[in-house]
Image (cartoon, rainbow, N blue to C red; front, side, top):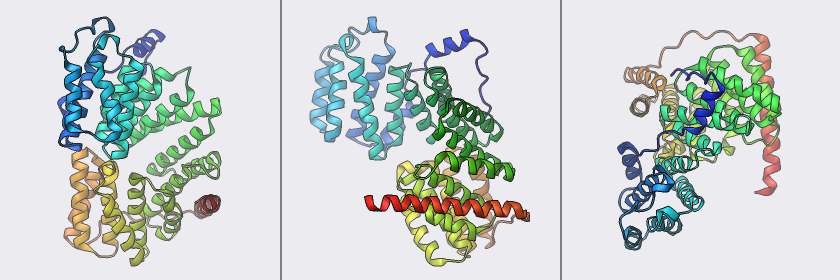
Length: 432
């Protein structure tokens, strides 16, 4: 995926600010929503969303007569007949009332109703529904950078890459000069999108832009996140001295207690596991795992833990982590990391010679990656599946020896991270 060319003039930038993405609904979005919420709940929400988007697309002066006479009452009877969850009653009723007099409907109340439904969808584990209603709110308030940013992240996590890039770039345009945090986060989000698509050069460029903004505006948490992502990019490019420098800078910028600290530890553990240095990685994964309570993050953390435990021959830890990970795979919101997690589990299975398990896990990883367009994971899963069928591990290139000074840096970083996570745990324990 190539990054879009930036606007070359102030006039062009201002034009972009005034032109939100297209506001239409498509059949695929409806199918996703109805697939997540079959039956009456999905039909009610899809109908409410269509009504709201029709209201958004219609100029304010042309909204009188937008709906047939009695449409509002019809919507209310549908609500009464199907009795949705209590939490959905008020927002759906607000959207039904819009049909009574659309020309007088209050935009603030309607957007609040739509965002309430999006928050409900998050708790209900319905990511496509959450995206649909968040996107609707962002289209209704086209100058709100925060809503554009949220829409971009949700679209990215559902592998809607083109839609995600459009919204990230819109968030960047809207926030420039007035909301530097959203501006920097927009570049970081775009970098993650490019990284997932395998375009590491583009990812490095946009995240470096975020780092410059964070330094200039003294946004320490964002500076930490930018260094964190640049560490990941350096790992992929085998620039380890530079990578460890970014990891140390991220650790300093985050400080003890930062919510992203476990993720930094986890990413370092992943790098060491990829090198086959499982004895160094496993204690890091173990220290970070309790902090991952969100289903998506926990699945990926457990998958890495499974692989590292297998790598050191610890069958007990391998079996416990694998069982918990497999239990999370059915959670719909975990789809964004399901392919990668299954591949890691397959690698752990292989490490202990569990060939039947490895073959099944690799097959699932391949199917999920192909469905989501995750090319790198798909190719790795294909190789692993073929190897598992033949009862052997995937052939790896000879591992380069670790330079002594880099080994010292790695051990020092591992110790600092374990100590920081231990201090964080000690502070949190009395509050539990």
